[in-house]
Length: 457
Image (cartoon, rainbow, N blue to C red):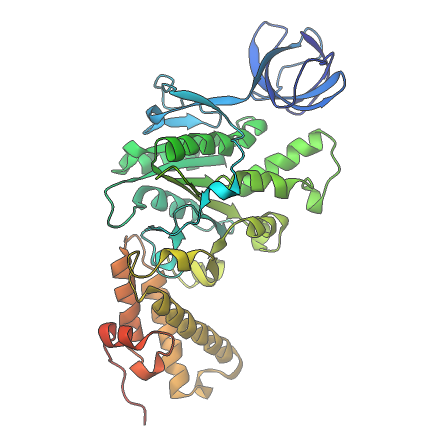
């Protein structure tokens, strides 16, 4: 037993902790005899800092002690978690019994030798044309969705979770969905979406509510990733982990750092936030010896819509691109409001082409980007010179940009296959003559292009 000398937020300062080890799980015994789980965050000679997973509400210094368990934080893993709703610590939240554990694994994961990694090169179909066609998600990739307050990021994440699949393969994608710091309304929305989905039996939903202990928010993505690693690398399944919202996680990290009286970094966030986020994102990938894969799609709400804020800024250094939701697109009625110009998938080239999607995919995406970018420039010109100052060519490009947003990006509730997405792209490009499509190979133009453009005088 150890004596508690100080209580600060979710943390306890413990004296007489000579035998405690960093990362060790402990039991906090309160004065009424009840017990709460905790973990050792810091050890300094005979003192230790313990985070209490159930929160420190009602805990004082008197008659409170800490009992060591002499093991690191672990969670039970197995296929019995499929179809279940759990809390942020992996405990049942659906009223059913505890999932049967086939094994126990440390929640912080195990270091993965970079030599053991396989380069991601297999396409995942999300059903969204803006992602599948222009910013393709590849198995083993880590791709964040940058959004702003008030945009339908939760709806987008839920739709991806319920409709993601691998074309041409019978193996279904298993989704581990971890929601951090969500309201009860949002939690009910995610529950309903999963319950109504035909894929609910192969998904896992972890819910950390806004009124749950802050410290549990830091455990939620780690428990989710530990479950996913077992399913991917030991059960050889294709697993998609969706984390929402990374900003809620970082706010919890800042709160804990302040309680520990650590020196703050940029905008009050701890200086080690980059390393902490990397310890989550770098758990995605494919490895030799396993046919499974672990792919991450993280939702990140940019504070004040600022993409230079420390959270999206550091995330961008770690991940392999980003997909951006835009208020400007939402204001123009585009649903979902993907802004494709600042979006990027750095691994797209490895996951598209003959044998994966279609041979014309890369060139078609480049051509759509080029034409749309020209349309956006013309739209800016209109705000300066007015529509009367536009040439016939400018008007045609401007009309293409409008159709691209309304039909290609703004697909509403529809789910599109990759074939439907690519065919729609060619339909939009039919407004241009074949000679104007310089970013697509001539053989692809000859095969897919259907000219409807009128000859210009």
